[in-house]
Structure formats: structure tokens, C-alpha cells
Image (spheres, rainbow, N blue to C red):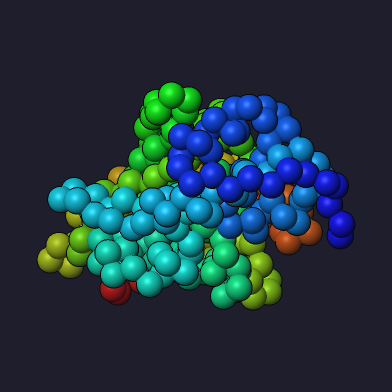
Length: 283
């Protein structure tokens, strides 16, 4: 595939990148890991490609007393290798481990996956379940923060506006929480047909808190809040969890395609949620 001719620029600061993006208008495209943009270059036909790879600060993974801060250009592989993520946001580690293959994980970025906003994305469901806060930079050094619940608008659409960049993903520390990502696919490295991201805090054999994200059960990642509430106070046993997750697909709008119809996905959501919660609880 030979793309159309375009101008390539590689700014070294967020402010410069935002300015270049604003100047390019609708003809500019941002290059993060490139795993979504590059295959679609001819379809998108950008006049200017703005590569964020030289902005070192966007690749950092740091922590403060309350949260883990992941730069939008941190690769999936960097997340997998981060002790901070493993210790305090294990669910993201587990979800990223299910992304494609090592080649994609070494190039693809967490921020790029979130902004691409594929409803079958592994990263989106985990970010939602973890209660992520996303920081967006705009013109003149302005920034704004949105919750993961407000970040996703529709399939392949987020609240990031023209001339803006996602710069950080901030995750509350969930130290000591169990986590598990359960993904159903027909072939290895495939996008999720259905996936469930679950993180739970167990106290004395009882589920004290639970957070669950669903992938490919609608046009955006979804939180299963009703199930989260139903799990609290239950013992982490097969029968108790099975009863609590029965309504997980209620109110969802999963697609029907060659991989399975909507009813199939609703059934899978129940099975996968039960498995994910039990695994996260250590049962």
C-alpha cells in the first residue's frame, strides 16, 4: 500500500505539537504508535502527519501518593514492564497483555488506543473499570481533565476536539485489589468478540468493592454498575458470583456480525464476567 504524499513533522514538546495540529486543521493527523493510523493512511489521506515520538515526557510512567500517571505515548510493552502498574493498577497490565502480539505491543501506545476508541479495545474497558482520569492539552497550554465515563462518545469517537491531544492517563491506586481480564476470541491476537475487565477488593472472603468494564458490548466501553453493586457483600464463590452477574448484559447493545450475534454476546458477557470476577477474587 502506497499512501498519498504528506508532510511529516516531529515536534519535541506538547505545545509545539498542539500548535502544529491546530495549524493543520482537518488535514492533520497525529501519529502515536501508528498501529491504527498507518494501515489507514490512504483512507485518511492526511496532508500533515504529526509524530509525537520525540516528546519524551509523554512516555513516562510515574506515581504520586494517590495515583499512577501514564503518559499517552507509553507503549503497551512499557506498561507490561512497569512495576508501578503491576502493583497499583494490575487490571491495566492484564488487559494490555491481551493486546495483539509483541510487535504491536512494542509500537502501539496506551493513549493511541484510547483515542482510537474502538469499542472492542482491550485498553478502554480496563481504563473504565479502573476509574481513569484523562488529561487533554489544548492551545495556549490549556488542559482539561475528563473521566473515562465521559471520554468515550461513540465508536471511534471521543471528547478530544480538533487541535487537542491526550497527554496523560491517571489511575487511582488500587493496591491490593485482585484483577483479571477475560477475553473471548476465535483466533489469537484478534480484537475481542467480548471481553470483561474486572478488579475486586476482597476482605475476609467477601467482596468489598468491585469494578467491571465490558468491551464490544456497545458502541463504547461500558461499566457494569448494577453488577458491581450486586457483588458487594457476597462471598467469592461460584454460586454467589453467578447469581450476582446474571444481569450484566441488561441495557447493553452489542453488535451482530460474523463473529456472533447480539444474543451470543449477551450470553458470553455473563460467562466471562463470572470467570473474571472469580479469578480476580482469587477463588
